[in-house]
Image (cartoon, rainbow, N blue to C red; front, side):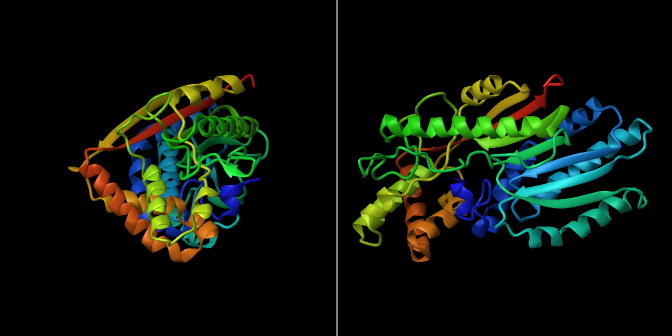
Length: 362
């Protein structure tokens, strides 16, 4: 059951609040643009001189960020072809997200993109764009049909809330909304098991769709350490749990409602990702890196973090609690983050970038 999609979420960002978080996602995408472009060129080089290049963005949402990536990839591949005095390939671009995604808004931006790219090559460039609604935890494309796939901030979202978070009808993760450092060990185990299942299915599905030598570029939020979080680290999602607790004391939400709510969210470590890649066996790791940034009282306004969290979770929260809770919840969330930062706790953001190369023999 694809829970996060049934709750009308983007694969990585809540559609409802995408615009307010697009600048945050844009920064993350731009930080990995160089490796994305070099991976695209390498994937096409592995295919020697492909007549057509097929690209897929998994979890595209409905903003301009995904098309910006596509535009840069096409330019990079065309630059390689021109430099080698080769004929320009034709491009097939697949944009994947939930059926509930606003594909109409996304497609309204495509003619402008195509016109711009054609003008750079005197009209001699063919770029076709199609939407592929559905979950990336399963097959989406024909066998051996893609040179390049990208996924930005999508694979943090599990296919469902992990099973086993209730014991004889009682919540195991009481008072928490995700796998927080204060959760019982069983909660971390259940989340990790769901991550293993989902990421393995993702890799197996993609292994059938990517050509030999093709690449998958993945960027996601991860854990800096393999194991538990440090005591003085504060996650925006942990702060969300604290905010719900405050609303319970204010009688704005029922405690039972909070106890039955868990985010289908997992932040893996590099080791966990590496282990799953080697276990599945279809890909080699071409590139892997993590970048961490700690935010303290000297860093930007807590509202920035609260807006980011709201963008990622609003549709899930509305589905479970109703829309009336949103404004008081995130006002409280902003205040919780402010107070924690003032108390010298910090928010540690870890971004993991992973480039996979499809083994030619698989």
